[in-house]
Length: 283
Image (cartoon, rainbow, N blue to C red):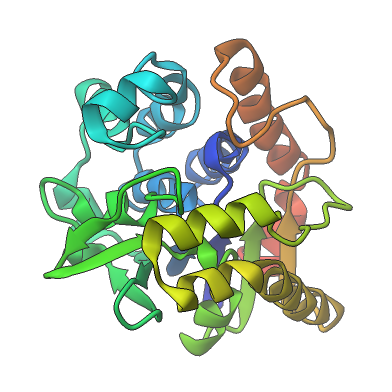
């Protein structure tokens, strides 16, 4: 296999699709030497890097459907609309992270975090995943919906405020080719942040740079896709994304919807397996 990077987009519970994609990768021993992700993509990549298929299924399908995941329960208990702690506890209860496999993996994993002091995106590899998994939790701490996490003495949150698809980080790591796993259907267009979100961000964070980053988020997203599309033209990128709309949003918590969404990721990847192997130059 050539030096290739796997890039996983976030997308809330839509990441169940990505989990299905990576289950197919693991079953067919497609182990890329490098992967990078943010937000929900970081949780999915954790299971891919540690080679835990069951954990992918728990993370993508079962964990988002628990009562403590979204709404008043996590707001009262954790101070966040999304229950990151409850979700992590549920996953660990059913499929504990294999730290030994994670750290001995042939795949280098990097996770992006938004530094709330410097307003820069910083990347950390799996050696920074501790027993509490603070780095992963910080990556999933969505703007407005979640409290930030203190990691290495600094407050961090979801890097999706700036870097929704970490294609440029994969390029910086010297990868010759890139596989991008997107949770968005073909034709998706990210719109500018609505005024109420900008107002909420200003009220909650009292930080003009965070508000400005939110205002520019759709511009950065489109620029990232422009880079990917140019790499596709050069034969250096392959995009795996859903080709059906099953009515799943980033807030879906219904197992009857997430299970088919996960299966769609698996089935669509399986159908392209020969193409993927050829792209990666796997014999």
